[in-house]
Length: 197
Image 1 (spheres, rainbow, N blue to C red):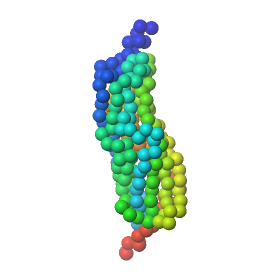
Image 2 (image 1 turned 90 degrees about the vertical axis):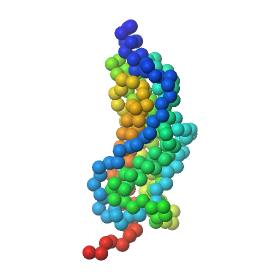
Image 3 (image 1 turned 90 degrees about the horizontal axis):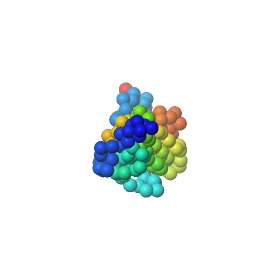
Image 4 (image 1 turned 30 degrees about the vertical axis):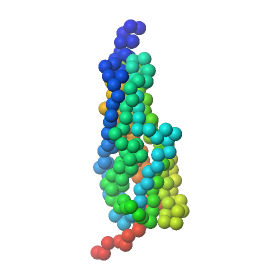
């Protein structure tokens, strides 16, 4: 029993009382260009609809699971999602513009993280949920879907670095799920004339 206590205490020991500041940078996917994407212009909008739209994205814990120091994002979470979504769209060849005939709106509903204690290692768990809606120039809805993605990784420390890694994976996978959806692609009509051969 004493050995188990030592192992679980180790998860949060050291700097559990020291706040962390992290920069969330989901990696730009190595995605193949979507055929015809270069002819599609869309405006990207992100709204933070969380009950508490804070930049505090996690808390460290001690070995008993008590939530302690805050882990804070350098920038508002809505900006993180906007930057990640924009990069993912551009990587697939879409044209992201300030004013366009089609609008993709991402409404952030959940952006949460928990550390879990364990026997040998703990876990870092992130959950990202957003509502994606595509509307045409007249405001008619062409696509609507709730995207929910979790990421869970084994960790030794309840640190900002581990929170960053878990969130970035969850965000990248959520955007991959959305942009890889055939219904999403079908909702984006070409807005530019095809290139002259």
